[in-house]
Length: 333
Ligand SMILES: NC(=O)c1ccc[n+]([C@@H]2O[C@H](COP(=O)([O-])OP(=O)(O)OC[C@H]3O[C@@H](n4cnc5c(N)ncnc54)[C@H](OP(=O)(O)O)[C@@H]3O)[C@@H](O)[C@H]2O)c1
Image (tube, rainbow, N blue to C red; front, top):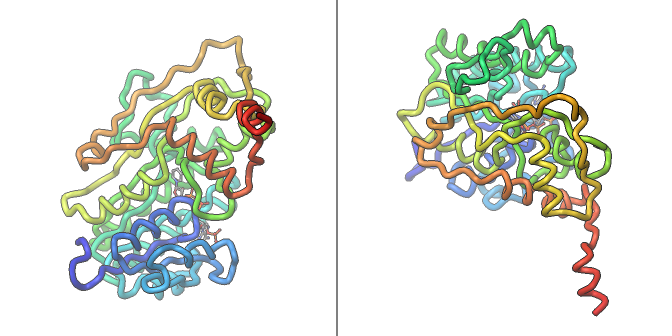
């Protein structure tokens, strides 16, 4: 499936997003022809895509909305593969569930009509992890599914929507004979290509701006955006790839995250206190990323990824670059 003589054409839905922008960049670097769907090709927030190396020759941006089947069909027809990353990322049930689920069905139906070789769907750890009945000792892997009732009762509409969207993808792919492979990333961070700040990066940014005065007594799994993008491509290029791929590097307590940030960037007002110090510190859960390792992927460490996330936020003007004390001394001397 890798491009040899005739270039392979891939449709990437939601091309201007955080993860998708990296997918588009890496696809272009590998010589693929890319059709990126965006809701508004004229919006300046998508300009970074046109500036990518190879974009002038091999990137087309198509206007498409997840709830507009015809627009997706036009974008997907003639493509060899589809990477479906577009989704609302919100806990507002009205905005989340319908576009995520119907949009995913639309993408799979259009892919079946276009007879694409494979669809890679970006699901989430949100469709895997949310199950209060799973014992803490269980190793979280691709066989785990979030509990829909629990997501509903806790008003976690993002996870609820991602579970239903992934189930819809599997059902529709099976019914229509589409070769589907699913990526389930945990919280994704790393350098931004797009000019705006997406939801997962806000989780890091809030610790640097002073808006979070404390950190939560909870754990979170992390992975770098460049690895997530690469995994999408590897899964398309590996004929034997199948099923779901949990995409995670490590699980850290929020206290460890703020410690790493404070060591690298002491100039920011990073919280030092836990919101809930009376309860025992939340323990990390166990997970398996064996399927990723079997693909031969070496994942970037959380430390490197956190560092480069902040550097990128500075470069894009989302964080002031304040001189450290050492720089001050250096400048004065
Ligand atoms: N970032 C993470 O930590 C993480 C973790 C696990 C899974 N994921 C999944 O990865 C995918 C990409 O996430 P991301 O972090 O890159 O988010 P993002 O930057 O917010 O990108 C989401 C993209 O989806 C598009 N979109 C939203 N609603 C749409 C609609 N109705 N029709 C067409 N396009 C629509 C957005 O387009 P506009 O620009 O037009 O708004 C945007 O380009 C999502 O499926 C998300 O659930 C993300």
